[in-house]
Length: 112
Length: 113
Image (cartoon, rainbow over all chains, first blue to last red; front, side, top):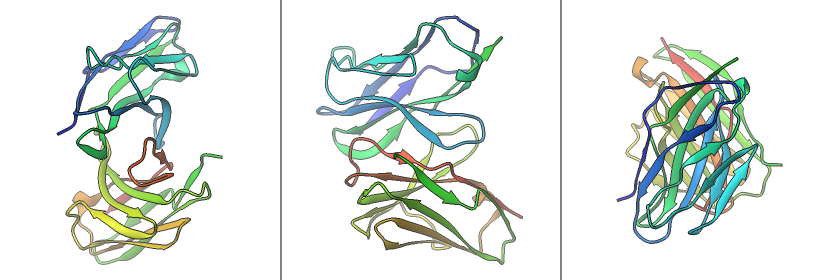
């Protein structure tokens, strides 16, 4: 079946630091990959997506590239802000199971 | 507009109460979902409605009863809940069932006393 593994948190950074949150997946076929963000007390927001190998999803300064050879979809941002503090979920759909499969989530805290 | 709305935002209910959660989307999506999210965990799928028909029930206890009155609305009826049912209940929708991206609402924070 499908699975997503993302780096354990929490991650604590200073403002303007570089962010990487690692995500790897297991799926048959060609899944679509997503990053969702959940701000404190809120629902999930779709941050970015990629639907085929080598696609780069980007939004609000965040980027992730669909790497089929390493089955990875790492989230990066060059300069984080305090307002980026949230929980980030890597997710996929497709392959053997079209239900949305989430990683466990990574809590990011950005200090001023 | 990629907005999914949910009401109420917060709900406190006793174990003998009956209450309902509501979800609405106006994106023309034909699939709608209920998820349950416990603290510090990812969302867990409960139900999927596809073209207004229940297509997936993830073995959810019968004290949770979903309803899809039309393509824009999704309800979750609650009855005789247990304290362990306290969680954030999220509604989501997608253009077609289990399609590429799902759009989530802000959730209803449910506390069962």
